[in-house]
Length: 351
Length: 200
Image (cartoon, rainbow over all chains, first blue to last red; front, side, top):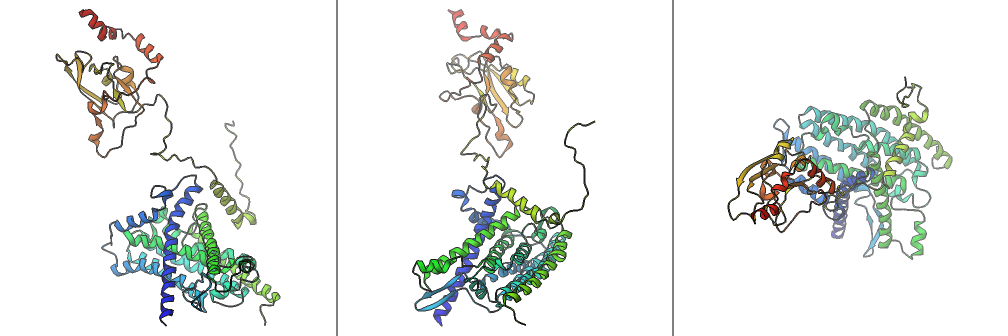
C-alpha cells in the first residue's frame, strides 16, 4: 500500500514538473522560434542563448504589482486563473508516457492513472477549462474581458463538437477502447492511427488549435480588438497563470495528438530495436527510449503549433464560426461515416 | 497615360475549391515562414558587436588642445553662431600670467557647454571654428536618465592631456585647404610660434 502511494506520488510529481518545465521552456522556445522565422535572434541575454529567460520572466511576474479591481468580484477573480491552471494540469493525468517499467519485481505503468474512459475524461476536463476563462472574464467587470470570455466559451463549444466527433472516429478505427493506454498500445503492432484517420487528424489538429486559444484562433485575447481579452484586468502572477496555462495546454494537446494519431511512445520497428538490444519487457531502457520517442513527437507538435502561430493571421469572428459549424462539423461527420464504412470492410465492426 | 507597370486588373471570379478550403494557401504560407528559419539573421548583437561606422562619423564633440597641451578654443563664438540648434553656450575668460601652458591665446572659454539633447550633430561648429578647436568624433553620446546630464561642460568636452583624441581623419588635406582659403589668414597672426618670434 505504501509502495503504491509512493509510486503514485512520484508519478504525480514527475508529470507535474514535466508539464511545468516544458511549459516554461515552451515560452522561451516560442519567442526564439518566432525570432528565427522573422530573421531575428530572440531572447539571448539571460544566460547562454537566453536559457534563463523563463526564470527571469517568472521573477518579473511575481515582482509585479498585484491589482484586483475594486468593482470586480474578488473571490471569482482569484478562482478564474486557478481553475484554468488546475484544469490545464489535470489533463496530463491519463496520458501514458512510456511502456511499463519493472521495479523490484513489480510492473509499474508510467502513467498517473489508467482510466478506462480516459478519452471522455480528457474532453470533460478540457471543457471545464473554459470556466476558468469565463469566470475570470466575468469577475473582472470589464466589457473587454467579458467579450473575450464570451468569445472563448463560444469558440470552445463550437470546436469541441467537431473534436469529439473526430475522436469517436478515431476510437472506432483504433479498436473501441476509450483508454489512452489501449489506444497507444494498439499502435505498437501495425500502423499508427494517422494512416487510418488522416482527415480526423486534420480536424483534431485544427480543433486543438482552437481549444488552446492559439493563433489563428486566439480571438479571446486578441489585442487589436479587445485590449487583452479575458485577462485585461489581470496582473502579476494571476496573469502569469493564464499565460502559463496556455503553454501547458499546448504541451498536453501535443501529447494527446502524438499519442492518439502518431503512436505515442511507439515508433516504427521499435520491437526489432528492443530485441536487437536484448532488452526484456519492463527494462528501464525500453521506457526511456519510448519516452524519448514520445517526447520528440511532442516537441515537434509544439513546434508545429508555433509555426502555425507565426504564419497565419487571426480569423475574423464570423469566419471562425463558419469554419467551426459549416466546415469542420460536416467534415467530421463525413469522416465518421467514412470511418464506419472503412472499418466495416476491415472487419473491425460487426453488425 | 501609363505611369507604372504595376496596374492589376481586379477580378471577382469565384474562388476555386482549392482556394475555398484555404489549406493549399496555408501550406504555401507556412513554407515561406519556414524558409526563413534557415536564413541568416541580420541582427548585430549591439554591445558586443558594433556596426562599422564611417571615418567621418559625427558623434560626441571634443575640444582639442594644441601640441603643448594648451586649449585651442579662444571663445570667439563662431561655433555658437553657426549652430542651427543653438546648442552651444560659452563665457569668455582672460588668460592671466603663468597660464600660458593652459590656454593658447589671451582669451579662452571659461565655460563651454553643449546641450547634447539640442545638438543635431550637423558638424557646422567644426566647420565654423577658425582655431581647429572643436571637432566631432566617432564617440557616441551615452544614454542618461536626466536632462541635465546631457549638458556637457568643459570637463567632458576638453580632451584629457594624457588621452588625446585622434581627429586626423576629419582633418583631411581638403579640409585644411578649405580652412586656408576662407579668409582665415588671421589664424597665422595669432600663431603661437610667430608671436614668440615677434617677442624675441
